[in-house]
Image (tube, rainbow, N blue to C red; front, side, top):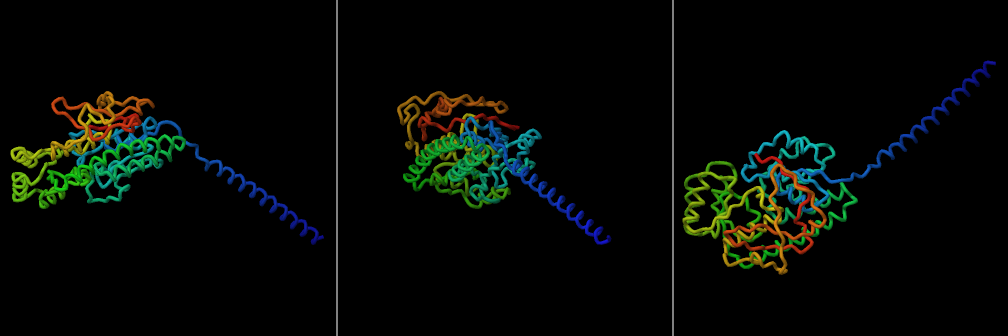
Length: 382
């Protein structure tokens, strides 16, 4: 009798265990199925919300993204010292809501990559080219940095909007054709002006001048003092003035965003010594619709200053002999530019020329133009 009862208990325990195992197996299967279902991320659609720390990188993002991006640039004013810039609460809010954040890096805009959402993707120029703290931060003037950033932006946009990959690839190729033309014009100048020299009140155009093959003759003691943020010794300033007076520099590059009594003294000395002065700001002036346009205009200004007889096609004589079309109006700093249509994407670039100076063009549209931006908006300009 006892044996039967013991056997019955064993059978009951075995049955209960079997039921628990079966239930657990079903539960595991259910979680796995549920996990598979949850792992399938629904692809996002619609315009990509892009926020850039500075207008020049925001412009490049718009060139690559076209009508499928909405770009907001935080710092766009040429009247603000970027090194001392403090973002507003509204700027930080915009960054926190961005799907893609475009930053310069190299400690130039560290505020731009703080307090971002977990889903945000950061595209950094510094990381793209391997630049670190202490390197010259004005990377948008480097052809290598621009090329690397264009490719990275196309890759990131394609990742977050896979269905638009072909479109972003096409935009990148359009941009690359324009950049190739610009690079060719710089190489042509460099080959014919191997002995060209320049001096600079501040190293804002270091990469651009290097790409042009122009030698920097700025006194090194002056350069070090400015880079370290210290006072320039009177002897170093005098050495710089004497260099300009002796016309050992073919052009003086001046950053008006870093204006001071010292820089005014140097530009004044250059003017008296008949050394051309070319102003190069850190932020992209509003009259330019794209980073490509701005850099091309600077190349034109610098090469003309060094060699007035050198240039590409005079204004009004496009290489293709075609009318270049009308320039777009400058966008308001706080207003959002209307969405560009596919037809607008194909319009060739043209800029309003200075009425007092006949500008030269070192780059022309090829009829399939990536210079027209997508939906862009400027942020802080204080």
